[in-house]
Image 1 (cartoon, one colour):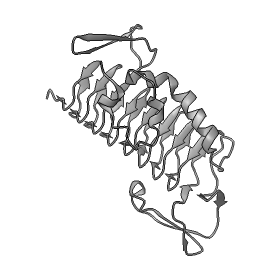
Image 2: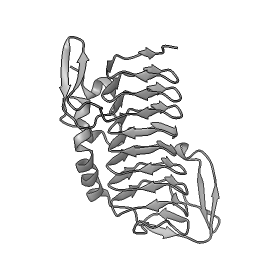
Image 3: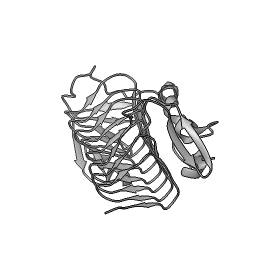
Image 4: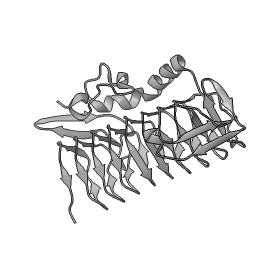
Length: 267
């Protein structure tokens, strides 16, 4: 058996509740939308919205207010709380910034404290983005997304129906479809987590002597805590990587389960 706790340390995780009552980690994928809508109903949505239009003026969200004038920024590492926002020379601790040129597509979007959304990013709901996370220029968040604390959704990175646990980072040109990234995972530039099989049918996941048939139309990859992938690597649909596994650059990872500390490097 492969439980969620085998792959992830869920203690103090921002949204560990999404795993409650599940036997296997891939059972999270069909419940992401419902869970995010449930959380949005309790936490509320962001107060910055332009009905799908590009934001024309940079906005700061601070203690329920939206500020657009007399602002000054000192850029720094967003994920470490070093991006500073000033209003009339007053430091606004925990303020979030949505730059002009970003697009918040609908109502069902929530931004935590200290979040920065750069110009050119497009976010669709339902989506929750945790505290001190960064959505970089050109990112495309397609909805049904749960992004944890201190995460990076990077330049030209696309994500849909996916979970990023705290400190997960996909900094450059990644595709994350129907997938889960564990705590402190890092995707090298150009990593693609493919999610649709050419030949329809269940995905076969063998763990020891036990075989699981996963009947999901789309199933990308599940990466345990501290997994790292090299640049331009690709995982086939239905890949499960145990904690602290490493994927070399330009590797194509076959579907299936890989135990903790696996090193996938053929070159």
